[in-house]
Image (cartoon, rainbow, N blue to C red; front, side, top):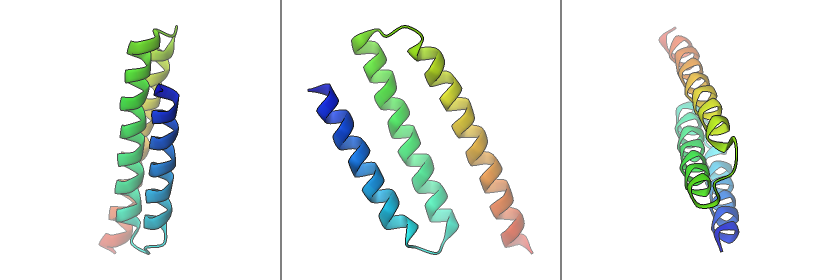
Length: 84
């Protein structure tokens, strides 16, 4: 049951990302990407609580730091580009 929910969430997220990628505004794409990765993180935390997989919490933390850092860096460079 949980695997169906996870797969459905991923498919929905990719559809939303695909729809927003047609838009030429990179800020919308960045917000969509950040939103989708946060949803994936919440799903991973839920799966870790249900299945108690070893080392999944460490992977979630690494993914969280990489996602947050990547979003901040992308927003910084988009702001630099828009500021000119």
